[in-house]
Length: 355
Image 1: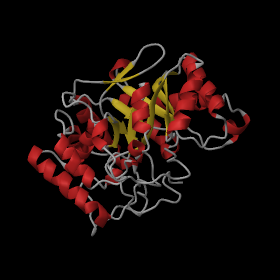
Image 2: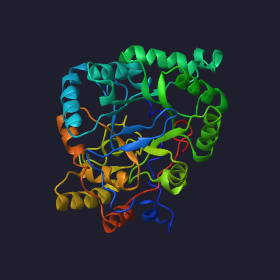
Image 3: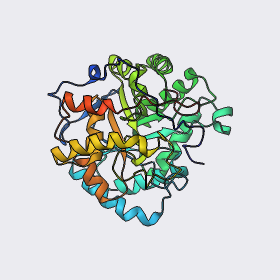
């Protein structure tokens, strides 16, 4: 089953009139570099990561990404390039490829010193026997299975994949806290949570003296809802890192697709017709040409300029090289204004995207 199954609006939803996107910009002096780092709060010592996270959703996933294991050598070469650029933070999940993604992640880091990479995986929240009949124990049980697939003793960040679990927030938080108590995870995060539920989850974790370190949502110039809804501001206020998945709108913000060559129908997040995306691509392309970087790097730099950690998929060397070019520079306020004139607010869905 594709993670993008469900009802997704293809009608572009404009950003509310008068919304000031510049208020969330980081100071211009804060430039993402290959030797810099983000900080994720953890109970027993904060975690330092690269500004960009490598999205492993496509690895092993045939439903959405038409994966073939023949691609694995290309992924391994891309991993070497990313490491050379200081990008060592991998984001995977129990749901990706029904565990195959985690197995691939384990292959990539095999033999590496444990302090040279950061691994994040996500707790399988879809109602099943474990989640229904063992509601508190389920996160621990499923994480142990993940660690077996990756051949690791612990993950740096363990994330609740979405708020569709049958358990209450309090019950899930207790189970996630137990993962920290047992040394299976260093930090706890959520994904696709709206502001109110994120705060509730953080309050439950505080009972175990564990901070909530992140909330991962879909965010990019074609879907700014997490910003316009106040989620981004709430994250910053509480020291929670906002991560963005599908940071390039499933390829729509790379220049790969056009009205004549639309993305596959399985790429349904931010399912906006490409003719509506063309004005955005023109601006990104213009900025990229002036700066000597690809369109994808401009879009990733936009997220980082807002203090957002972009999670971006990588399947081959060219993607690794292009995405790495988001480092070492910052969009100006005027460039951000030009991008946001063509941006959309986007929508939420009843399944994953409750933020």
